[in-house]
View 1 (cartoon, one colour):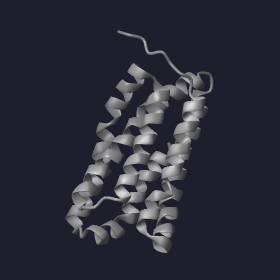
View 2: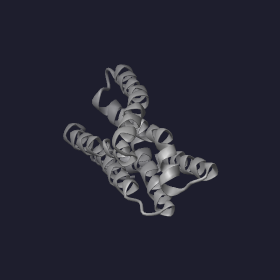
View 3: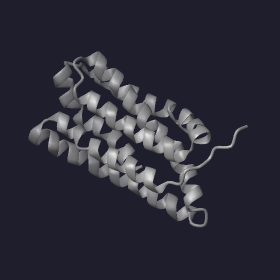
Length: 174
């Protein structure tokens, strides 16, 4: 959860770099952020539906792999149009994660759900505070692409960790 929230919050920090690289004016740059957050919001319903249909493990892992893949495309976007499209896809990827994390946590920690959600929400705040700062330092030091890119292996590793630790759930047919 910390990585998905922190990953989204990297965008505002790297926005000056994106503006320069893609010759975006302030309105276009603001629209890019709006698109990211709208895609994130709209993907939460399908994320819940997918968790119910195919299970939390599959949805959570697919969400993070989609986020990793689309960030890779963001890094290599040849035009602002592609940047906008891949940013929207990244928003969908991290948005799919939002709801299944609750149901997976409730399944895994039914007796300590409050504590587990507290830890989860704390990770979001840490990710939101730390990842943009790290991305900013990296972007300043070696380039904006690396400011996004350092998160890609984290998305993949956490997807694999979730696949290995979240129990497979057999969704009930209705």
